[in-house]
Image 1 (tube, rainbow, N blue to C red):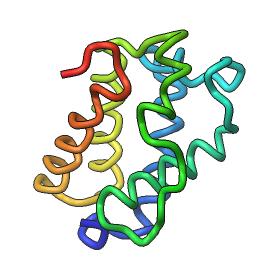
Image 2 (image 1 turned 60 degrees about the vertical axis):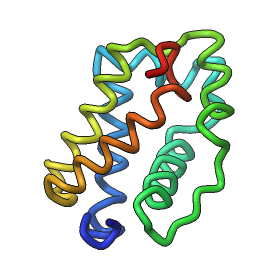
Image 3 (image 1 turned 180 degrees about the vertical axis):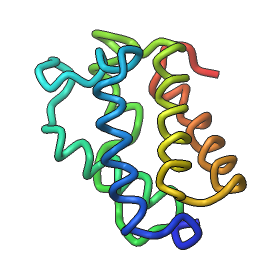
Length: 128
């Protein structure tokens, strides 16, 4: 899927744009403030983790070295659990940025959506 989505030249800017949208959208920005007690990384570090996580998940060459999703979101889950609305918006952001960056077609979008939905119990209070 990495190759079909355009490799690093497409995926890296897509991931960066996606993070910027997460951090600015009124439905999701409250989970991304740099000053929050659960955010222990800079925006650049989070962007790098987002990119390497995405790469690892779609067969790319970049190894994700961050925490698993439960550990990465533990403090946030305790202090400001992600809502269903925020998770839905975040999911939409990913798919929207894939389209905007021409990162694959319908089959890649469906596969990424499946991956995102599999992560839902790890990052929200709602699970499945």
